Image (cartoon, rainbow, N blue to C red; front, side, top):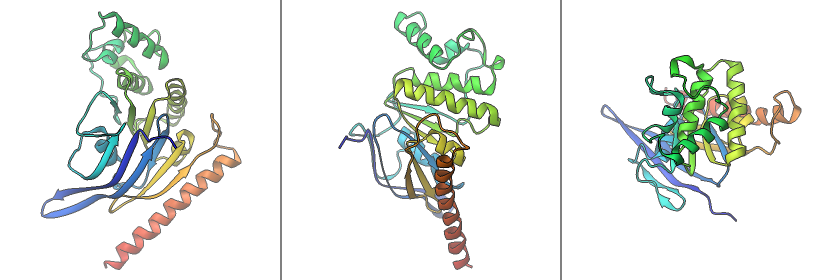
Length: 259
């Protein structure tokens, strides 16, 4: 059995809100193998983004253990790439400069790597363009390329396509799968879209809210590319949707019990 690249054990996360303690995550246990693309879905408030921030090392105030390649995650680092919901590009920098970030394009090894990434995300011809000249999908491609610059062990994506129209979103899903199949970078992708979760994932982690807990992990064995209209796709989508309906029933029952 392969050793997981990411190992989360008995993760608990609490927030202080006024005079109250809010349990955001409870007893999260998850192992992710190298080269996997795992999607995380769940209702609003289930702690999806909180979980991602903890794995990224952006939040270290938690109980339990979170290990990357056997080492405790103690803070941010180049071994973890992060793509936010919005591109967060520097408007005064070109595409190639945004990808290079704080590294100099005058260094041959950086120049070569940036050129490789521009080809990988299919932005040839836009190297000298500024963010205002890019579409939303193109801007997110730049963000993904920047996150991959230092060859991270894991790439974390927090609903990166949520603000895109349906056509661009579908195109970006295909682009991300091309990048994943080329690089085999381990990815955790947070989304609220059921179809997106099934289109992309090797496994889907379904969280329930208040507090955020793993409700179920669904393995997706469909070959790529996946056709949404296919019977096998719809069957898996129904499985995930059924879990959501159970979560809603449980949440309603718990709310009713407190009335």
